[in-house]
Amino acid sequence: MDLNLANKVYIVTGGAKGIGAAISKTIVAEQGIVVIAGRNKKDNQAMVDEIVKSGARASYVTAELSKVEACEEVIDFTIEKYGQIDGLVNNAGKNDGVGLESGTPEKFFQSLHENLGHYYNLAHFALPHLKKSQGNIVNIGSKVAVTGQGNTSGYAASKGAVNALTREWAVELLPYNIRVNTVLPAEVWTPLYENWINSLPNPEEKLAQIVAKIPLGKRMTTAEEIADMTVFLLSSRSSHTTGQIIFVDGGYSHLDRSL
Ligand code: NAP
Image (cartoon, rainbow, N blue to C red; front, side, top):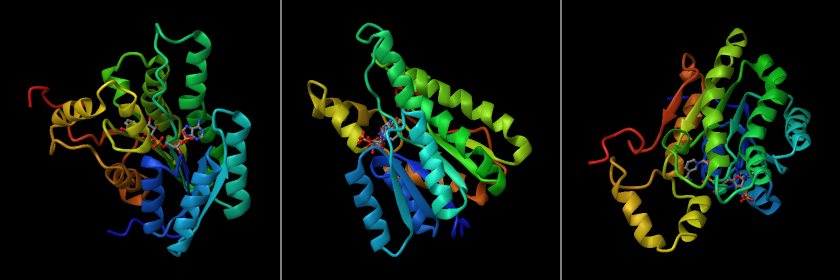
């Protein structure tokens, strides 16, 4: 199946690591051009070098996305460099453990800036360009939006809002033929996940417990499996799909817990 991404330009936030890196690589494997927006210059450079070495096209902007100006810069850079934006993948985020009891009001709002604000800001600044290209938006959500986890109010509020905004933006952007969808992972092995599991008292035991509860295959979802769905949704092959929250999680969030 040709996804028709050739010479189209896609912004991927957090596109140098974990799920974002898999999305960046999948886009360029389909002949698209990727602009990575992330806060770690070394990671950004390494990913772009790897992509360019393979003969594909990619650039990066080093940006702490919790800052509004940084989001505007990402869009300006992309337009200056390539003249168009065909899709935005809002992916950067972190389960930062700001709990109701353990957190503070300041930490809660900081978590919203780091996990949610830039989803809106980038979509807002990209909109005039997405209108021109009739491009689309894919958000990366989290199971925490629908299952709760405990001790992570900021992240849960952000991901809950991402689900709501997916429907809200899908409606607002109907007149422009801009589609908006969310891919929702549960348990994906990435640097973020590895850090989180290692922060627990018995990481190996905890990991085995989690994996045993993933219905399909009793295994973690791969970053590539999230990337495949994301890139399909970015492509014109999903041209009548909008406002959807698609769980790529081996059945973890919905299937019977006794399985
Ligand atoms: P990851 O391995 O940590 O990669 C995320 C990338 O985004 C990193 O490069 C990170 O930079 C960057 N980033 C995060 N916040 C940023 C910010 N405010 N400004 C600029 N760059 C930022 O994480 P991942 O596991 O791939 O997660 C990607 C997305 O999937 C997140 O939205 C996460 O919530 C969601 N998700 C993941 C899982 C899972 O099991 N892994 C499950 C559900 C949802 P640093 O390295 O500097 O932090």
